[in-house]
Amino acid sequence: MNPNFERALLLYQQSRYEMAEAELRQALALEPGDAYAHSLLALCLAEREQFQDATGEAEQAIHLEPDFPFAHYAHARVLYSRNRLPEALTAIEEAIRLDSVDADYFSLLAGIHLQECRWQKALEAAELGLQFEPEHVACTNQRAIAMVKVGRKAEAGATIDAALAKNPENALTHANQGWTYLEKGKPKEALHHFREALRIDPTNEWARQGIVEALKARNFIYALMLRYFLWMSRFSSRGQWGIVLGAYFGNRILGAVASSNPNLAPFILPIRILYVCFALMTWMASPFFNLLLRMNRFGRLALSHEQTVASNWFGLCLLCAVLALAGCIIQDFKGASFVAMIVFGLLLLPVSAVFRCESGWPRNVMAGIAILLALLGLGALGLLITAGPDSSRDIFAATKGLFSVFLIGTFLSTWGANFLTTGRRRR
Image (spheres, rainbow, N blue to C red):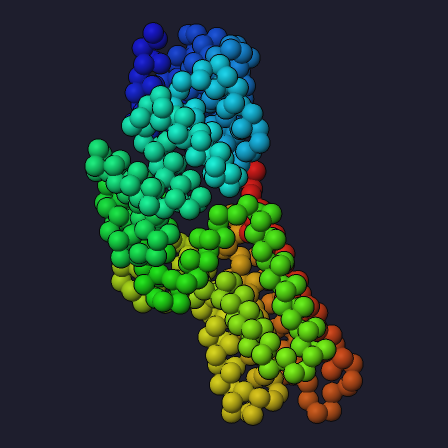
């Protein structure tokens, strides 16, 4: 075997991808037809997010050896990293057809199914991988995740306990155990495992996200919201849309029933108020409790840069809304302070949605929507403040028009945000 390739393989296993790439390019300079080297180079490039080159190397490996299963596996891994899941599924299925006893291949297949919320298929793929390699860490963790999603939480916990007994220093297993405890509503136990995961691997993003959620879940209100979020995560994008639309139209039907049956209105109104409050909490719970977490020394360190920025913008809008509310109380809910309270209060919705969207085009579009709505709302507020008692009707008409567009736009932005948060940026 080429010594450059041997060194590259060792460096890849140590996650030193840039150095591995250099060795692989030297190996390929001597043996340009080596499909194995092209495949491994594709994996190195994908880890470094050089996706176009990675795809080209994987395709070159397949061209050189169409029946080489590792080439198809590398191609699938690159496509998976690019969020091209249907193509990745086709590629890994071809790798498994050529070599049906490699646990790594079944692990990738399980990962694709998990991303697409096909929990039962993910469970089956992980269990097939474990048949060939009973102690395969990735398959063990994927099996546990799938078990949680299909409602087999006790079995999932036992599976991870067994894995931790064999290898107590595995960060990914500790992180998954933490999420299993969060699913069970046990944030204290979850925190222990997330801390262990970060002690072993301080760069583990899965554990960092978990520790933030566990810290917030110590609050009873957020604990209820987290249960809802975790429950919703079990459904595909289509299923989540079905639940959101069902709740929205259910609320509209209740309103129609109350209008046609005044005797029922006093009983229906509390239900509709609870729905509105709950819907608002699903939007604002995460940034609001992130803002509160900033007051906790450990929580402040656990928040990512994005979460900190999101809480800053949310906090600014919330502060302006509270100050406007104070002005409303002083002015008996009249004048510009009342409009300011509505503008800043409603801006909390699009602002909180920006960082819920994946980075790239979904987040950029949502940020553009939030900025446009802010300009409309602040424009209407500015016209109202500068308009004196002698101002023309045109100014008041323009103010009313801008404010109306702002209100309609805010309502529509909630539906747009629901679409954008389920969007997956293909790379």
